[in-house]
Length: 329
Image (cartoon, rainbow, N blue to C red; front, side, top):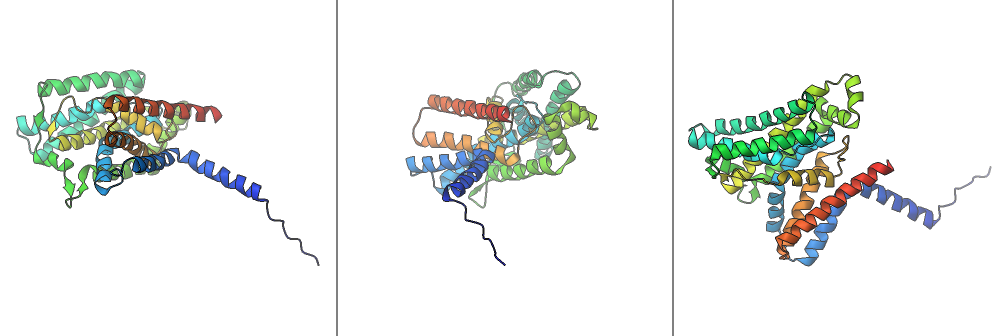
């Protein structure tokens, strides 16, 4: 008997196969690759960047945007958008501060009222979108104005003191680990669980992929949209409390513009604005990308005006990448 042995593949074939696998991995984790490259570049340009204290600073800077973006992920995955998250965050913090300082409520009760405020704001947006048939852009823009206006009315346009229970959201654990980072990680795990392990999470992907098909398959689209926007409002409320804890006050103008950062983090993290795709981990990485850029540019003494230009260019590049990816698909 004669046996035949397969000839080894040429080196060029093996190289092309390796490159293909690397390209596939990079395509699926583009935000993570970008984060690693940014980390390397900033570490080279600034000796202060890759230090333990500065890494914690990056985490603190990313925390509020990441928490907002986790809630935003639910909405974008379902082919919607929530422009109100920054205003809802400010309103939840103001309600908490108003309840504790002006009404004399127990701090825990005041915090619960703040979170309920976020949920109610999300529900109103959900009602306008699912039952009022308003485009999500218009409905949440209206809520952006309403929430910001209510925050200004309740606070009379001045910061409100926060109880010590809210200040806890901005403190450190063990004297070194910032509480905002802990809350960010916990809510990231929760968002990942909701997206990957719950009926509502599966419904988000189904609605984002094809709303009519989701409806025909038995999903109550209206009810699920209410839940989706309520979750976004809840995450926004927690983000508002974290920000208030860091500032040690509830400021009615706080988190202004954060809604755009939250959308950017979700898109940079690989989600599609057309809906149907997105992961909590990708959103987390997207928020870190924004924080690393801002932190690195600050260390390099780059003007805040130019920082806005850079962030805008990154957002445009992320959306362009998403558009090209969908065209190829």
